[in-house]
Image 1 (cartoon, rainbow, N blue to C red):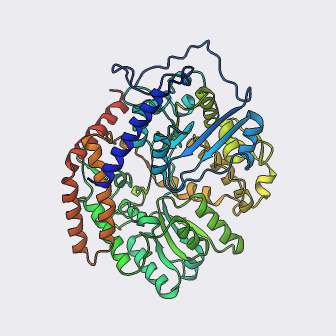
Image 2 (image 1 turned 30 degrees about the vertical axis):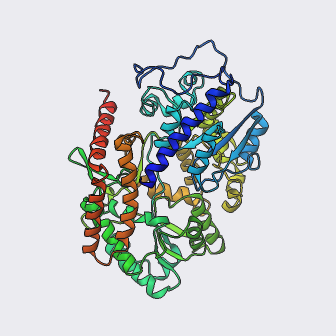
Length: 558
């Protein structure tokens, strides 16, 4: 049996075992909660209205203490201690809220399995939409949120009914709050250049892939201790190449392992643009113009190279994350000419500059924050999460509590920076860890506020990350909302095929990168397609096509 399939079956067995243990315990712990997430009615639809009683009491934050546990279901995610940074300390003092972080320990799937079988799920869990989320929902482990939407205004106001409807599960109910939902372009993907090296090499034209190769060759010759092109962990940066080889081509297709052609999804392995992108990556790898340990290095090793200025060009799907911003800020603090800068995404000569989109956004955002049926007071937790996603919550969580870096807000509720914001070095502000506990990110509010704050400041005082976003990454982002929610149930034939194809994709991309010639890349991708078809790939592509077309109809109101 395939390892991935075994993991999924084990996961389902753990859920069934957990349900059996809970049923046999005889507790009435959940009697005062909304109905759990088991499907109550096949007639429920995606447009089901909340059943909130208007006369029911609304939970007032701070009226009584609220304690809950939080778990981020990611290997890389480490939740900071609660009440140490200024933002969570403000929440603790003003709302009497205390959060107990639960860590994955770098093994999220194992941790989640352990919590399921021992019936010790956290009160709140952050996880991707898809397999694990649906398994928990189907097992009745998540709280439906519909009864709260009419009582607490922010999520409905800022996310909107259309977005929330797109996020509803098959029973018509909503079980998670979207994180980083948006109505405006966003994204952190792209290319960064080492400013100092670029200047020392004469600031050559760097617009096309031909320019890139020539530049990397110069770096290799003159800076033997520098990585010419860093492509991040698992060489994920090479997926950006495709976006510059065909107009409107999206990295989203790599996530789906499928490419839309003529109103249907087709094999990514046979896609000519993906083929060309891998050939460029393989050539750069063979010529030692890109990192040679792409499949063995960890995030911390990438950040260390960036922090020491040992990268000439970075291609990354998350080029402006907090760690990279810290690396840039540390370099610039020592030398104003050092650090990194985003450049317009690279392309071939035949692709128009304004048709290159390494970034994408969807109104539904990134992932979900769900309340489990273990929570003693799910409505109070929802009230807090709803506060987070509103103007005040976003201001406190992302820009610090009132009185620290801002004292007033403008007509749109955005904080107006005070003198301390301007006079405090970014490296000092980084210590406040602003944004750490923003679990229901409201992208349009945060990005709009950051833009207003930073671009009003004199050059040299602006937040580096925001400046790169405003100047480059947000301008190179396209709306891919219709390409969301295309994943099948993990235990269906298509779901099992999807897991297998994902493994094949990772395996054969690595092989292609190590190929000795373009002909070998062709051969490897042909083998990958054959291996995927043997696992039910064609049926998976048909499923995704149907889901995509259904999204189009839903968006058109039909």
